[in-house]
Length: 470
Image 1 (cartoon, one colour):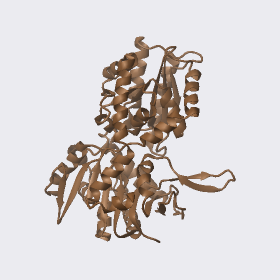
Image 2: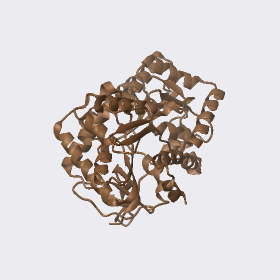
Image 3: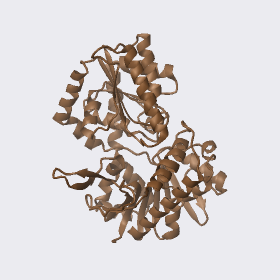
């Protein structure tokens, strides 16, 4: 196959398998955050995206998407169960999110993780031209940088972790901690969402690997690996255009009518995940109803939960608990035609989400731990009217940037209740002032700024950015 000067390596390809009106299958660019982030850069250079297409035991040949070539890595059913659902999402994911759920360790999961990472590394090595830039993404592929360097020492390799990186006392639990660190240190630049994550990584490298390390540089054999914080963002301009579309505005107005024109509409949009603080939020809302601080006829909560990792037992159990709690609250406080909580367990397209953002007076984003949380940024971007209050967990990466939000510790139920009431009762001038400041920040810290800052730091000669922007 042809080679490329820029290769992106991620667990999933940036495409969705859709059915055309004539019944034929076709592959289209998916709307995910990473795709939106890299698209402006990828379209300016010969680029290849290496990833899994989503099926098992096949590696379909896919058409170019917006000029980007697709290189499919095949995963078997065992790979999906042991690498993706196992080591990535039942071992690393909970550990990296403060062990909100107990991580599970199985040797066969680690063996599968190694095999799959090697497969991705080999595919990237095959796709990259001499001296190319390879950008590896996220916790599913932490061994790839080291494996790729062994195969192709001529490459410039970047690695970016989209999720939090845990403090040393948690990471030290991992049975194969040294191998994971060395895998990441195969990169020339390791990027994190927050400076604290880079600090944690440097501490671990010094402790586990006994190498010289600072919060900016780590010495490994005869190389110096640079590390740093590069907070990911969203396409601010795209969301503003979408939120201002007449059909989206009309849909937002209709949503308010369908909800009975409440005085206050509160919105939460989450993946079904134990890190998102959904149960804490429902309990706080239930107590506000029981205390009489809010009333169903005046205030409505719309809780959107997008299905996620439905084959993983922990997620199935969480869904049952959430739905049982929603049922209890509606049974106790709802009335005929007026539920206390409108619960939607389904995916929404971007136009529908934009309408929900426009309709909501208060957006509650209260994860127990999150690398960034782009929903918070999307809400701010969608409020082209300058209105809307954001209640944001201080444990979301976004809290370091959106400092004018109503920040809260989601573990503190009394504090969560007080903060929500503060947002509901805030003076319009306070709400609009906070929103204006957050919108101004996002205009200069959007998705393109994130991608440019990382690529510029990775390729300090500037040759790649010159090629990409020429």
